[in-house]
Length: 294
Image (cartoon, rainbow, N blue to C red; front, side):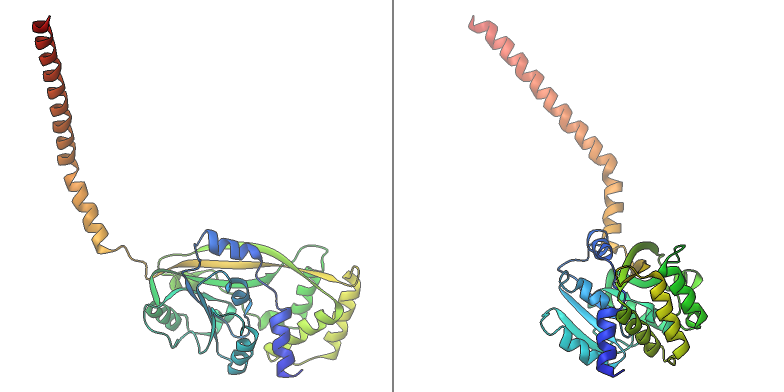
C-alpha cells in the first residue's frame, strides 16, 4: 500500500465522529463561529472534517509531516482550516491564543503532564480540552462483536490503547471532567473492510498476515447483507476546563454588593416612606382646598 493510498484510506474509511458529537459541541459547549480550535491527532482528521464549517478557525496538529501536506490539499478549499506539523507537548503557537483543544487517542502516546502544561500555555481562560476515542461495540450476535474478537485474536488489543478514564484523567483535568457517549455505525463492502483493516495494520506497524486476511473474508461472508456489513461503535468524549478562573474583579464586586445590601434595603424603605408621605400630604391639601372652594 502506497503512502497516498494509506492516507486516502485514513481520510475516507476511518470511523467518523457522529453528527451528535457536533451537536453537543455546538449546543452544550457553545463552540461556534468565534472559536479557534486545535485538532490534535496523528492520522485522524475526522474532527476537522466535522467542525471546520462551524468554527472561526480549526488547526490540524499532526506529527506526521507527509500527512500534514496531504491534509493541506484535502482542505485547500476551506479558508478557515490550517495545518501545523508539531506534537502536543510542544505547540508552536502564541500564549493565550486558542479557545479549545480536541485530541484523539494520540493522548496515550505522549506525556500527559507536559501536554497539560502546554495546553494551559496556549489556551485562554476557561477553555475546554476535549478527548475523543471511538470504541467498537460488542453487541451480541453482531458483526461488531465478532470483529472485536477477531481484533483481539490478532493481538490488536495490545496495540490499540484505550484512553484511561481513571486517575490519569483526574490528574490531567485538574478542575474535574465530565463524560459523554455517542453511538454510531459504519457500513463496509468487502473491499472497504479489507482496506480498513490493512490501514489499521499499517498505522500500527503491524505485519500483514495471510491467515488473518482469510479470516476477515470469512467473517464478512458470515455477516454480510446485500454485500455489506455494519460495524457498530461508540465515541467516548471527555471534557473539562483548563485555566479555570473566576476574575478577581467579579469577586470584589460580589463582596461589595453583599456589604451594601442592608444599606440598599434601608434606602428603599426611605424612598417608599417619602413617597407615601408626599402622597398623604397631597391628599390632605386637596381635601382642605376643596372644602374652601365649595
